[in-house]
Image (cartoon, rainbow over all chains, first blue to last red; front, side, top):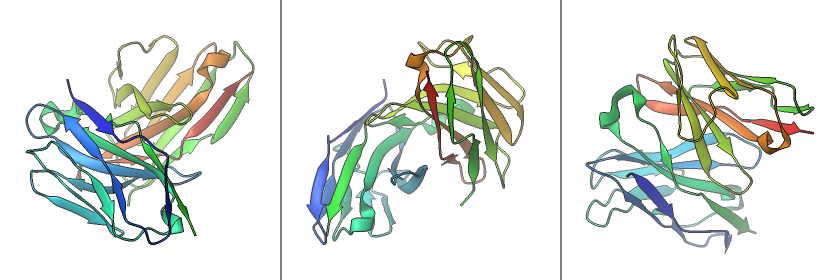
Length: 115
Length: 115
C-alpha cells in the first residue's frame, strides 16, 4: 500500500543552520507529494507541493524535489529562523483515486530553532 | 488561501455525553471534507471522508456509530462523538478540499477532553 516514512525528531538547530528533513514514500504510479507545517497553536498549512517527477516545490525559503528514482521528497532550507520552529509533515496523495483520494501522512518531525 | 473554521476550539464534557464539532469552509464550497484525529506528538489519523449529500466513508477501525458524520451542505460538516469516554479525548481536525486548486485546507482543530 501507499505509505510515507519521515525522519524522526525532534530536530534542534541554531538559527541560520541548514535544515534537511528526510521523507521517502511507497506508492504505485505517480503520487503527488506535499509538505505541511503546523506552527504551535495553529492549524496545518500547506508549505509546498510537487505533482510530478523532478518538480521542485518551494515556499518561504523551503525547497523539496520530487525524486522518482529514490522515491524521496526531502525538505531543505538553507538558513532556518526561530520562526520556523514547528512540526513538519510529509504526505502524499494518489490523484487517480478520484474524489476519494486522501492524504497519506508521515509521522511528523518537530523542529526547534534556537536563537 | 481558503479558510476553514472549526467550532468549538476546545470542549470539556462528562463521560457518557455527546459532543458535536462543526467544520465550515468559509469562502469556498467543499464537496469533500475529511475528519482526522491527532494524538500528542503523533501524526494525523484519518477517521473518515465526508461527502456532501451522501454517507461518510469511514476508515478501518473507526466506529461509525460512535463518530457520526453529517455533511449537510457544501460548507458544513459535523462530527458528533456519541457517548464519549475518556479514551475519546484527543485533538480533532477537519479539512475541506477546494476543487479548483485540488488542495485541502485545514481547520485549527478542536481539543476534546472527556472527564
